[in-house]
Every structure is written in C-alpha cells, then in structure tokens.
Length: 162
Image 1 (cartoon, one colour):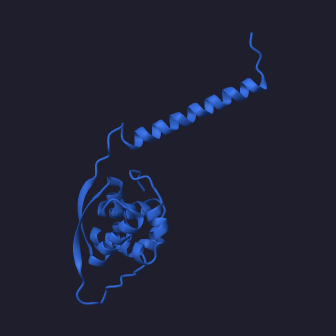
Image 2 (image 1 turned 30 degrees about the vertical axis):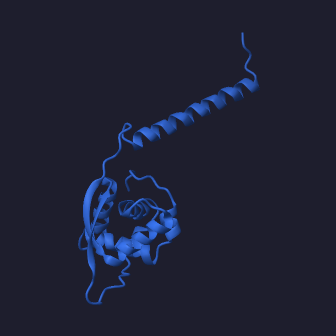
Image 3 (image 1 turned 135 degrees about the vertical axis):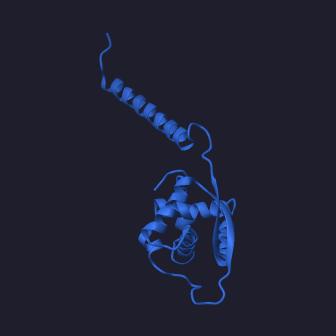
C-alpha cells in the first residue's frame, strides 16, 4: 500500500497541471484553426485614400509585414482587441477634408469574417456613411493618433471576434 507523501502529492499536481496546459494549448490550436483547417479569408475591395496605402506600405517595410492584406488585418485586429472604438471611430481626424481633390484608391484585401463584421458594426454604431469610410477612419487613426509600435508589433488572435 502506498502512503501519500507531500512529494508524491506535488508530483501528481505538477503532472496534472502539465496535462491541463497541453490540453489547453491543443484546444486553442485546433479551435483557432477550426479543426486543423485554415480559416478562410474573404476578398473585399475597400476604397481608401492613396496616403493610407502609402502608410500601410511604410508599415510593411518598417515592421516586416508580409503584404498589404496582412497590414490591413493588423489594423483591424488592433481595433477589435485593443483599440478604444469611440476614440478610433467617433473622432473626426480627416486630414484631407476640404482639400481638392481627394485621391481615393481601391484596396483589394482579404479579411477574416470577424474583422469584416467589426467594420460593419462600427459603421452602424457610429453612423458612418459606409464600410469604406469606416476603413478610412480606422486607417486615419492608425496613421495619425495610434501608437504604431503597439499596433504593428503586437501579435493578436486573427480569428477571434469582437
């Protein structure tokens, strides 16, 4: 018959904790990948200012980001997980308003469903004209008032919703 010693109890507790950690990590990996499969991206064409595309290109170079799609998703994920929505989407900070002519360009990008849903939600919540203006508002914040290191240097969950 075994006697429960303090040493045995500690060993069992440590083994249990290790098993729990492995289980949580496995669950997170499998659930974030939806059963091991990549979560699909949705193609979206947004109309943004040419200066926003240049800004994203600068961030790509500075932070070694893969491409424009990824840079746009980083901005959106920041808004979802760490950003102050009221500060981002309510404050008017357009630096091209009243200037002629604006230089709007199409930005063909790929977003995850929760990111696209967040843009739609912010459009409705803050009574923004359309999803394009909502994207421009976010990019304007990231370019002018946002902490670029905080936005572009932090890894966030790309498939989590708001």
